[in-house]
Amino acid sequence: MQTRYSFGGDEHIFVEVDEEMSLEAFFKSLSMTTAVREAGIAGVTEICPANASFQIKFDPDVIAPQALMDQLKGFEAAAEAAEKTIETRIIEIPVLYDDPWTRETLMRFRERHQDPDATDLEYAARVNNYPDVASFIAAHAASPWFVSMVGFVAGLPFTYQLVERDKQIEVPKYLRPRTDTPRLTIGHGGCFGCIYSVRGAGGYQMFGVTPMPIYDPAGKISYLKELMIFRPGDILKFRPIEREEYDATVAAIEAGTFVPKIVPVPFSLDAFTADPAGTNAKLLEALNG
Image 1 (spheres, rainbow, N blue to C red):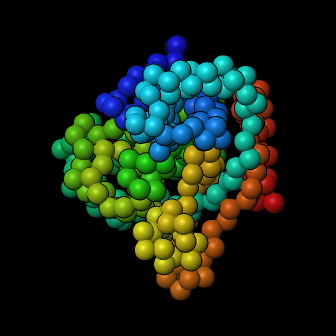
Image 2: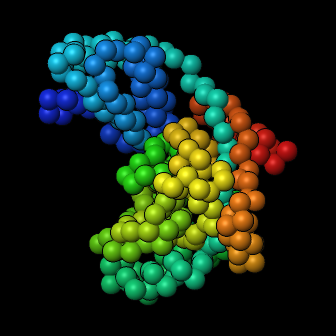
Image 3: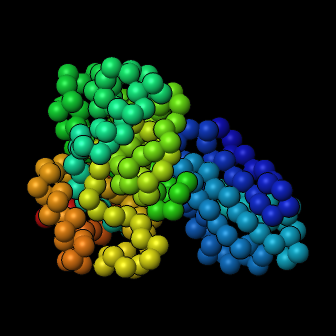
């Protein structure tokens, strides 16, 4: 689609790169927001990137709205020609799948679900044509996931599975949102995964929980001095764990001795498009090497 530019009131410009999420749309959006940031345009007060769009907040007393709109459109051609490579990080996320907390929660909300007689994992496995929950979990944890956006609530990453489009896990959201979701739930809705940074309402299917906090507004957790761990462009790798390791990790976090596995890596969209399996193998080699 052609990029859409629109004003949002007197102080915002919204730029929609595409109607659906794709890595191509993300990289174009990333390139444009980077250009805005590096240009240091007087009057721009905030840049908010999303999955396939972004929003700019500005002071209309400093820069005229149409003048800013024209500058943004000028960045688009350069963004389309920009190199689609970033220096990023791959982060390992331990996950207790089919945990007791999300299971208890989902059982309280079965009347809001498409399949009241199945758990979220059972339903997700069935609609994605996996023979059982174990094989679905193996597929969910096998590939890396790309963080396309951080938001909705503070610290929450939206993640996009790094596999060919026809192999992506897709599961509809609940028919009606829940009023409760455990903190650090691994969720999935549509083609997007997420990690709920705080306890609260939600509509994504619930697959498990991680013992690893991803947001700490108090800044007391040793590895969260910047309050949240994720930023757009990060790559995640889920690692299934058992209850014993979950409890040990929680204890280590409370003691201040837990250090998440984070490794710097380059990511090339062109390389991934040409060879998804080979690109993922290199990412996992970097993480585990």
